[in-house]
Length: 215
Image (cartoon, rainbow, N blue to C red; front, side, top):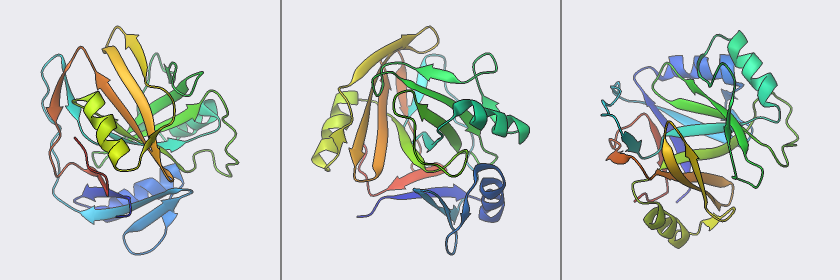
């Protein structure tokens, strides 16, 4: 089964306008948008309330769609000029150590239709041959309730590790295990917050990835 990124939203037309005006997507067929290697299908669905999480909980499931940039500073400036709803640290991008060797820079955008979009740049080897500030799919974010079981499941589906799993730590989230898993052009960022309790994501969450079995 082919992998397919689907966004469920009550107003697909408005989501299409937001993606094209802000993140360089272009129409690619009925209810379909394209940005470099990233193709999404917009599907009409019910509005999704933000789940209420207690302190120390996190949601497990497909959590974000990460688009790629070769210059995180320029990408952040662009998104600030567009007045997007950004998740930053001290008004700057975040840094995720150890992944891909020297780490990764990123920041997140809260879309008006319930989907979190990450903008990501690998510290090492960040020349992607881009023609736009933000172009192409970097990965899909998959916080997991059981890191080892999820990796084993993905390996059984033909995914392979991009690097040996790493362990990071920060004061806000505690200890985090992380690995990028690739199959063809699709990369999944699998991670688990070891000091927190996972809460399963609803099956009708606004961001979905078809063609991959999740633990």
